[in-house]
Image (cartoon, rainbow, N blue to C red):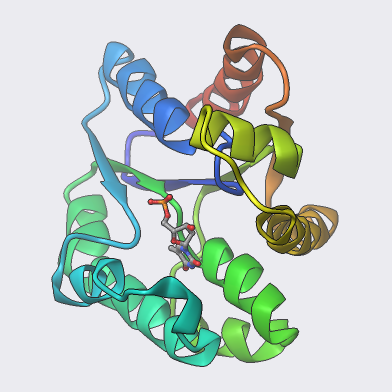
Length: 195
Ligand code: TMP
Protein backbone atom coordinates (compact mmCIF):
# COMPACT_ATOMS: atom_id res chain seq x y z
CA UNK A 1 0.00 0.00 0.00
CA UNK A 2 1.67 3.23 -1.14
CA UNK A 3 -1.42 5.29 -1.72
CA UNK A 4 -3.20 7.15 1.08
CA UNK A 5 -5.48 5.42 3.54
CA UNK A 6 -7.87 6.07 6.38
CA UNK A 7 -7.41 4.19 9.65
CA UNK A 8 -9.87 4.87 12.49
CA UNK A 9 -9.64 3.96 16.15
CA UNK A 10 -12.86 3.46 18.07
CA UNK A 11 -14.03 2.48 21.53
CA UNK A 12 -15.83 3.64 24.65
CA UNK A 13 -14.27 6.16 27.04
CA UNK A 14 -11.11 4.78 28.69
CA UNK A 15 -10.42 2.15 25.98
CA UNK A 16 -7.02 3.71 25.19
CA UNK A 17 -7.90 5.16 21.78
CA UNK A 18 -5.75 8.28 21.92
CA UNK A 19 -2.70 6.49 23.33
CA UNK A 20 -2.91 3.78 20.68
CA UNK A 21 -3.84 6.06 17.77
CA UNK A 22 -0.68 8.08 18.49
CA UNK A 23 1.31 4.85 18.71
CA UNK A 24 -0.04 3.76 15.28
CA UNK A 25 1.19 7.09 13.87
CA UNK A 26 4.71 6.40 15.18
CA UNK A 27 4.58 2.77 13.99
CA UNK A 28 3.70 3.81 10.44
CA UNK A 29 6.25 6.65 10.37
CA UNK A 30 9.00 4.18 11.32
CA UNK A 31 7.93 2.26 8.22
CA UNK A 32 8.45 5.34 6.07
CA UNK A 33 4.84 6.40 5.66
CA UNK A 34 3.62 9.98 5.81
CA UNK A 35 0.99 9.99 8.53
CA UNK A 36 -1.40 12.53 10.01
CA UNK A 37 -3.07 12.15 13.41
CA UNK A 38 -6.51 13.67 13.66
CA UNK A 39 -9.53 13.37 15.94
CA UNK A 40 -13.25 13.82 16.24
CA UNK A 41 -14.88 15.97 17.45
CA UNK A 42 -12.47 18.11 15.42
CA UNK A 43 -10.88 21.47 16.15
CA UNK A 44 -12.94 23.01 13.32
CA UNK A 45 -15.94 25.31 13.81
CA UNK A 46 -18.52 22.54 14.34
CA UNK A 47 -16.19 20.48 16.54
CA UNK A 48 -15.55 23.49 18.76
CA UNK A 49 -19.27 24.02 19.07
CA UNK A 50 -19.63 20.38 20.21
CA UNK A 51 -16.86 20.69 22.76
CA UNK A 52 -18.49 23.84 24.20
CA UNK A 53 -21.89 22.14 24.22
CA UNK A 54 -22.41 22.24 27.97
CA UNK A 55 -23.89 20.99 30.15
CA UNK A 56 -23.79 17.68 28.25
CA UNK A 57 -26.69 16.28 30.23
CA UNK A 58 -29.26 18.62 28.77
CA UNK A 59 -28.02 18.14 25.21
CA UNK A 60 -30.48 16.49 22.88
CA UNK A 61 -28.98 13.32 21.33
CA UNK A 62 -30.69 14.19 18.04
CA UNK A 63 -28.89 17.53 17.95
CA UNK A 64 -25.65 15.75 18.94
CA UNK A 65 -26.11 13.22 16.11
CA UNK A 66 -26.59 16.03 13.58
CA UNK A 67 -23.62 18.05 14.83
CA UNK A 68 -21.19 15.13 15.12
CA UNK A 69 -22.16 13.99 11.62
CA UNK A 70 -21.82 17.53 10.20
CA UNK A 71 -18.41 17.87 11.91
CA UNK A 72 -17.36 14.61 10.25
CA UNK A 73 -18.39 15.62 6.73
CA UNK A 74 -16.54 18.91 7.22
CA UNK A 75 -13.51 16.95 8.55
CA UNK A 76 -13.59 14.74 5.44
CA UNK A 77 -13.70 17.69 3.02
CA UNK A 78 -11.23 19.85 4.95
CA UNK A 79 -8.57 17.34 6.07
CA UNK A 80 -9.10 13.64 5.38
CA UNK A 81 -9.82 13.58 1.65
CA UNK A 82 -7.26 16.22 0.56
CA UNK A 83 -4.49 14.51 2.57
CA UNK A 84 -5.36 11.01 1.35
CA UNK A 85 -5.23 12.39 -2.20
CA UNK A 86 -1.62 13.43 -1.47
CA UNK A 87 -0.78 9.84 -0.47
CA UNK A 88 -0.87 10.32 3.29
CA UNK A 89 -2.21 7.88 5.86
CA UNK A 90 -4.77 9.45 8.18
CA UNK A 91 -5.21 8.02 11.67
CA UNK A 92 -8.46 9.30 13.16
CA UNK A 93 -9.17 9.05 16.86
CA UNK A 94 -12.95 8.36 16.57
CA UNK A 95 -15.03 8.46 13.39
CA UNK A 96 -18.60 7.70 12.28
CA UNK A 97 -18.85 4.53 14.40
CA UNK A 98 -18.73 6.80 17.49
CA UNK A 99 -21.91 8.55 16.38
CA UNK A 100 -23.58 5.24 15.47
CA UNK A 101 -22.63 3.76 18.86
CA UNK A 102 -23.13 6.74 21.20
CA UNK A 103 -26.04 8.62 19.62
CA UNK A 104 -27.49 5.40 18.15
CA UNK A 105 -27.57 3.94 21.68
CA UNK A 106 -29.11 7.09 23.18
CA UNK A 107 -31.77 7.34 20.48
CA UNK A 108 -32.28 3.58 20.09
CA UNK A 109 -32.23 4.31 16.36
CA UNK A 110 -29.04 3.25 14.60
CA UNK A 111 -30.66 3.49 11.18
CA UNK A 112 -31.20 7.24 11.24
CA UNK A 113 -27.65 7.89 12.47
CA UNK A 114 -26.26 5.63 9.73
CA UNK A 115 -28.30 7.52 7.16
CA UNK A 116 -26.77 10.81 8.36
CA UNK A 117 -23.35 9.28 7.68
CA UNK A 118 -24.18 7.84 4.28
CA UNK A 119 -21.69 10.11 2.53
CA UNK A 120 -18.82 9.43 4.94
CA UNK A 121 -15.95 7.50 3.39
CA UNK A 122 -15.60 3.86 4.54
CA UNK A 123 -12.21 3.50 6.31
CA UNK A 124 -9.52 1.13 5.05
CA UNK A 125 -9.12 -0.18 8.59
CA UNK A 126 -11.47 0.37 11.56
CA UNK A 127 -10.03 -0.77 14.88
CA UNK A 128 -12.34 -1.16 17.87
CA UNK A 129 -10.65 -1.32 21.27
CA UNK A 130 -13.01 -3.32 23.45
CA UNK A 131 -12.91 -2.59 27.16
CA UNK A 132 -15.19 -3.39 30.07
CA UNK A 133 -17.15 -0.16 30.83
CA UNK A 134 -16.18 -0.14 34.52
CA UNK A 135 -12.51 -0.62 33.73
CA UNK A 136 -12.76 2.13 31.08
CA UNK A 137 -14.29 4.55 33.56
CA UNK A 138 -11.69 3.69 36.21
CA UNK A 139 -8.91 4.35 33.70
CA UNK A 140 -10.47 7.61 32.53
CA UNK A 141 -11.56 9.03 35.87
CA UNK A 142 -8.65 7.78 38.02
CA UNK A 143 -9.61 8.21 41.65
CA UNK A 144 -12.66 10.35 40.82
CA UNK A 145 -15.98 8.62 41.27
CA UNK A 146 -18.35 7.66 38.51
CA UNK A 147 -22.03 6.82 38.75
CA UNK A 148 -23.94 3.65 37.92
CA UNK A 149 -25.67 5.79 35.27
CA UNK A 150 -22.31 6.43 33.54
CA UNK A 151 -21.59 2.68 33.52
CA UNK A 152 -25.06 1.92 32.16
CA UNK A 153 -24.68 4.42 29.31
CA UNK A 154 -21.32 2.93 28.30
CA UNK A 155 -22.79 -0.58 28.44
CA UNK A 156 -25.39 0.49 25.91
CA UNK A 157 -22.76 2.16 23.71
CA UNK A 158 -20.55 -0.95 23.88
CA UNK A 159 -23.50 -3.11 22.83
CA UNK A 160 -23.83 -1.16 19.57
CA UNK A 161 -20.06 -1.36 18.97
CA UNK A 162 -20.27 -5.14 19.43
CA UNK A 163 -23.10 -5.30 16.88
CA UNK A 164 -20.82 -3.47 14.43
CA UNK A 165 -18.04 -6.01 15.17
CA UNK A 166 -20.48 -8.83 14.45
CA UNK A 167 -21.40 -7.19 11.18
CA UNK A 168 -17.66 -7.06 10.34
CA UNK A 169 -17.61 -3.26 10.13
CA UNK A 170 -14.99 -3.13 12.92
CA UNK A 171 -11.94 -5.23 13.85
CA UNK A 172 -12.14 -5.89 17.58
CA UNK A 173 -9.14 -6.00 19.93
CA UNK A 174 -9.39 -6.93 23.61
CA UNK A 175 -8.17 -3.73 25.31
CA UNK A 176 -8.66 -5.02 28.86
CA UNK A 177 -5.13 -6.45 28.58
CA UNK A 178 -1.68 -4.88 28.96
CA UNK A 179 -0.71 -2.25 26.42
CA UNK A 180 2.02 -4.51 24.94
CA UNK A 181 -0.47 -7.25 24.11
CA UNK A 182 -2.95 -4.75 22.66
CA UNK A 183 -0.23 -3.25 20.47
CA UNK A 184 0.93 -6.63 19.23
CA UNK A 185 -2.59 -7.22 17.90
CA UNK A 186 -2.85 -3.72 16.45
CA UNK A 187 0.48 -4.13 14.63
CA UNK A 188 -0.79 -7.32 12.95
CA UNK A 189 -3.78 -5.43 11.54
CA UNK A 190 -1.57 -2.56 10.37
CA UNK A 191 0.98 -4.93 8.77
CA UNK A 192 -1.80 -6.67 6.89
CA UNK A 193 -3.04 -3.31 5.60
CA UNK A 194 0.34 -1.97 4.45
CA UNK A 195 1.86 -5.18 3.09
P1 TMP B 1 -13.08 11.88 23.37
O1 TMP B 1 -13.14 11.50 24.83
O2 TMP B 1 -12.62 10.78 22.48
O3 TMP B 1 -12.39 13.20 23.12
O4 TMP B 1 -14.62 12.10 22.90
C1 TMP B 1 -15.39 13.06 23.47
C2 TMP B 1 -16.78 12.54 23.77
O5 TMP B 1 -17.60 12.70 22.62
C3 TMP B 1 -16.87 11.06 24.17
O6 TMP B 1 -17.62 10.94 25.37
C4 TMP B 1 -17.64 10.43 23.05
C5 TMP B 1 -18.41 11.56 22.44
N1 TMP B 1 -18.73 11.40 21.02
C6 TMP B 1 -20.04 11.10 20.68
O7 TMP B 1 -20.90 10.95 21.55
N2 TMP B 1 -20.34 10.96 19.35
C7 TMP B 1 -19.42 11.13 18.35
O8 TMP B 1 -19.73 11.00 17.16
C8 TMP B 1 -18.05 11.44 18.73
C9 TMP B 1 -17.03 11.64 17.67
C10 TMP B 1 -17.75 11.57 20.07
